Image 1 (cartoon, rainbow, N blue to C red):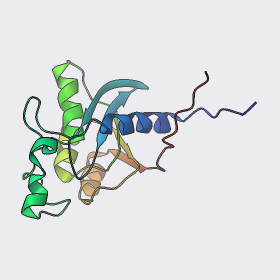
Image 2 (cartoon, rainbow, N blue to C red; image 1 turned 60 degrees about the vertical axis):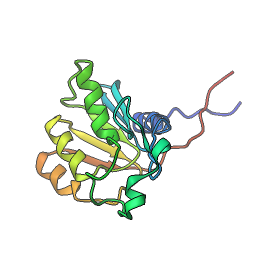
Image 3 (tube, rainbow, N blue to C red; image 1 turned 45 degrees about the vertical axis):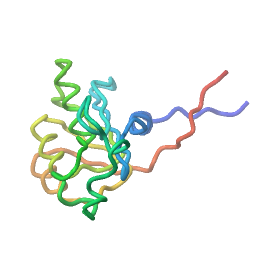
Image 4 (cartoon, rainbow, N blue to C red; image 1 turned 135 degrees about the vertical axis):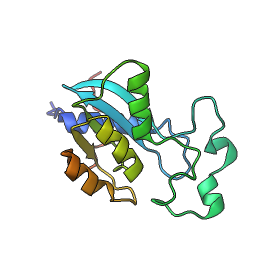
Length: 160
């Protein structure tokens, strides 16, 4: 019989963030985020247009149309970032993110980092880097621990 290795909590929640990212409507990056405290999921978020509005799948990418490189001019985008959406979803459902860990498929932009500082998260874990590293100094100053880890396997292991 094959030995089954149970994923670590970091691997487990990053796999979930990867599945959440599949809902993204962005044509450049599919990003997913999961807010977790005490090994319990508080909320999820992915990048996409505001609820009920037309998205890039329907309208095309405004940033591509204007030739804007990744990691710059964040305000010129139809999408709300995954980290913004995870905080919004927690708020809509009356759930505090204070002391939570954010597991995300990419590192945050500086705008999301500012939101996460004010949301009082304590840790951020990712496996892929976004084109903007300016969040690092902000996280350091705010005392938010940051870990970049290996991408978890996309294979789902279960017994029949």
